[in-house]
Image (tube, rainbow, N blue to C red; front, side, top):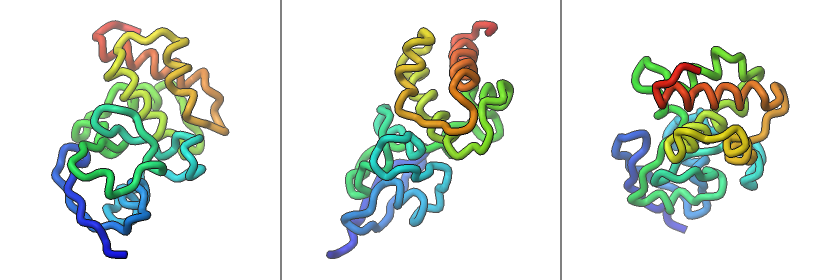
Length: 160
């Protein structure tokens, strides 16, 4: 089959690429565009390592075809920080020591940003529910949840 030409926006920049009809967004990000922050953990949408934000909604990059990115706006973990200034979620994950091997961290960062964008004042239960699709095998979840809750407070301008 012929490669498909796609015009999209990734991390605020217009991007065009060619992809095979069966290539996922995750494959395109990593293999075509060199954006390797998103990881493939399961390939079935169960682990959250490939989390991206598509048109403002949290999505699994492994479940979306590259051709479906046409005309969409995609944010990856590489687009979360503003220049050298980390997003509050990134900063708090570092400060709280909410990572070990860091394989899952990009997915958690993207998912937490999507949560805070949609609900800047989540309860702990809401944050745990929202992040339930992201798996971590190293740290446990308490430090991650604490980091997300403190980041939400930072975004709201409150002292955590």
